[in-house]
Amino acid sequence: MSSEQVIQTKMNSSVQVAITPQSCLAIKAGDLASTHIIQVAKDYRTLRKASGWAITFSQNENKSACETLLTISVGEAVGAGRNIVISSMSLAEGLHVRLEVNNDAQDTEDFLKQHSASFVESVVSDLSAELAILQSAYQIAQYDKRYLVSQMMLKLSSHIFEEGVIDRFLSELVEELNVFMSNPITSMSVIKWDLKDNTFEMPAVLEEGKMSLGYDKFPISVLNGRPISRVIETGLPLLMTKSESHEALKKVNIHRSESAATYILPMDLGEHSGALSISSNCSEAFNGLDLACLQSAGEALSTIYRQNMLQSKTYQQANFDAVTGLANRAHFNRFLGNLNLDDEKYAGVLYIDLDKFKEVNDLYGHDVGDLYLKAVSGRIAGQLRDHDLPARIGGDEFAVVLDELQLPTDAERVAARILRSLELPLEIDGVEHNAGVSIGVCVFDNVVDVSLALKRADKAMYEAKTAGRGQFKVYSEGK
Picture (cartoon, rainbow, N blue to C red):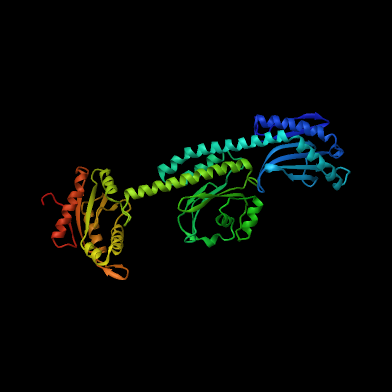
């Protein structure tokens, strides 16, 4: 069955009845309503004389979105420039009725309005039961849309939880949502802002099938005058037609070749506020059922985002050191244990001990001590490749896994670079500190048990300390 049920009746002229939403209940109510309306219309000379007229019942979500529940047109189609809006009134619970008559009758416009208004009032009064059924069918259709979209979001959520990224998720979200939408989405953006430091960012933007990710922060003042600024100020959703969106963007000197119907939906992102901006250039406005889909998707996306951030925070706390941001001992051990070396390739472990940390901590306090550790960790990480892993494994002890070394001596070159980087003083709160370190090096291949690597590097580090500190020593079986 199509989404529109068309009924032809033989009453001097063809009568077309379009009923939405798709529902047997709605079709039955619309059939009863159309029969009654035609019977009542016979008593009005204005409508008998006109070559065509149409009466439409719509469910209004707000001024920019509505869903047509029932349209009955008689005779010639009511066309632009030929019709007179005889009556247009809003009824209870968002129901709106509109009567249009072709302007080819002999009666004056005032006469048409005077006599046809009573027709509309009579129809509305007599069809209260049928109209209530149509509204109920519309609400059921909204619930159905919300349920189907929520199930789809549940299925898609695995991507963002498993992969921790939003790009693939957002692309598939738009593709899946368009199955339910009568006005396909052409662009979708996630916007996040922080009113404490007056900045915003756009983590994900999907436009014309192209995905872009961004984590740069911009002054929130950049958004002044744009539609999104109204959502930030009020915390309420914003729905705009194509023309409204075009006019709003013109005011801030944004020139677009094609305007789009836009819906900006606030989202609770936990620590930050945000919004989902959705646009479609396929029609003048989103209708009520489209809004039900978008609202359900927005609510689910808010939950998914918060849970993903919570999961990321939990993962961060479980695997990384809170002071330096480097991997902690547990993460380091897992990374080392999962190494899978190819033949003729080597790996190395560096065990790094700070020679002067206790002195700095005792003399200047823990706050300066933490800054000292951060500065040292930055110097160490700066000498490594992207796939190497630096870690803080104790109070003043660091370790590094060097993966995929071509030669055993490559580990020694990295240790020498780290020593040189720490020869330069560390400036903290205007005070310069000399960061002496001792480094132990253990190099191994795929034959050696990796569980021994850290112990061997630790042993080599103590040899470096014993030899006078500020140097590195390589573990050797003979020592």
